[in-house]
Amino acid sequence: MTLWTRIAEFAAAQPDQPAYVGADSKHTYTDLLSDVTDLSRQIEKLAPRDHVVAVSGQRGYGTLTCLLACLATGRVYLPVDERWPAHRVDLVVSEAGAAALLKVGDDEKLSVATTYGRGTAAPRPGLGYIIFTSGSTGLPRSCRQSVTPTSGVMRG
Image (cartoon, rainbow, N blue to C red; front, side, top):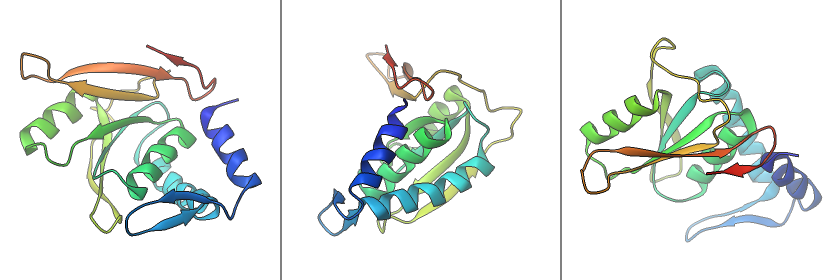
């Protein structure tokens, strides 16, 4: 059983319960499943399975939806801090071999900021997410984690 399968089953058992409560919004599990399904369709068109999808935006419902849609579709989630300068975003997205960069706006609306050619995007089988740190060098270094979409097992 995958992590996404567990979340979807839990949501189906409690559809009217709150799945997300933020400062300005509240969403039920029905809302969440619907939004993840809609976004999953978009992600399917942007990136092949096992490819990286970068997401830039503040913590919130839109970003949560992106993370879950990546899990649901077998894409690798790459969080990108919206406060990073453009050159750092480009470096991290390039290093990860992302197929697309999605931006979540302040209004929680999602837009496709950039798509990258399939020739430059790299599949990353077995990964759930990639996180970059800079350490003492100031240059991004990846800390890749496996949350295998097919097994739900986390490996470091």
